[in-house]
Length: 425
Ligand SMILES: *Cc1c(COP(=O)(O)O)cnc(C)c1O
Image (tube, rainbow, N blue to C red; front, top):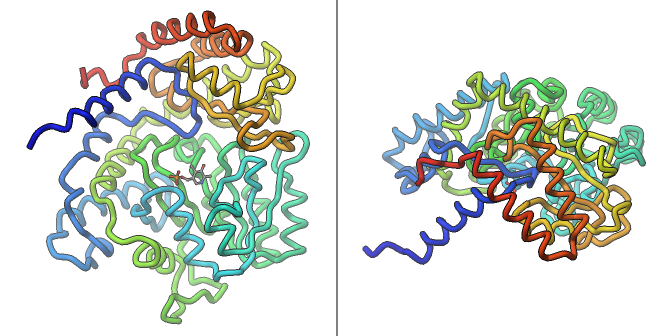
């Protein structure tokens, strides 16, 4: 068979793009070479519907071992009693959680998308908002989750489930407080830790597991694994809500969740991706990963200070985790203009609505900036000053093509110090 140079040349081009740019998209990271290598392997050929030891196909003895390693390592990372590693993505994991515990039309409460929440937490454009009755809480003027509002809505509406977690929120969560009001109204607490999971795994942020009944995550953000999703429980439980499986039998929460992933919402698992998850989970269990998490937080703090020094307005005035949200209105820039101009200088980030934004989601008043990817590349605190300096030069000279082009050259030269996948030539 002839090699498909059209596609492989583009893959090579994408590698060069990743090498030459400053990657600040808060949801992105660079996996290790071995995680990537595991993904491009023969388990992609295997059908394995079902779970280890209970498959609908023959020849699953090897992929059973792979999936069991992924499950065991994941349980160890979060001190969990049960884990499902099959969700194809974070959104698929969340779809399974909804399917497991909610009937169509039932109420749930989640953080508003325009205040930092995720599509799968009740956006009208998403299955979660279309199938279920979505209610929302927001953040205060200071940009902190409005727990008073969350409690008031929970008491008034008695939702079946309360979701905590966000895509654009720079502060830690008070899981204990959410669980207390949930217990009062009989709600399930579901934490979606897609963004900060790696920092939670390293013990650097509040632990959601003792307070939240169900926890889901992506595997490709701060966990630095392949693209994918997971669902975990620290404590399995006979469900006091009397939730039944599709056949009408009472089940434990782990059984309901397993059934909701397969056959509820997915077919065959991606065993090559599960192999890569297993490799990534092995890396997370090493001491190196804890050092990585600490560096992520140190870099985020240094970056926040560098932005502050230049008069940028950080939502909530700072960050506890790996990202920050910046309101650009005092700089007379929109998020859209900032994203597009920075892209020309090979500095990649995304426009983002800020709380109480007066601009449309396509324009926005803000940008979201994250450090997980540049931390993986080896940048340390002093480099954050350089990165913010380059960003500021672009934003303050957004209509000066020459200056933006000059920064692009400097960005590429700067990033040569931090080799990415040198083994790939
Ligand atoms: C990224 C994210 C997801 C979805 O992940 P995908 O893998 O893109 O489907 C879900 N929830 C939150 C909070 C996220 O930030």
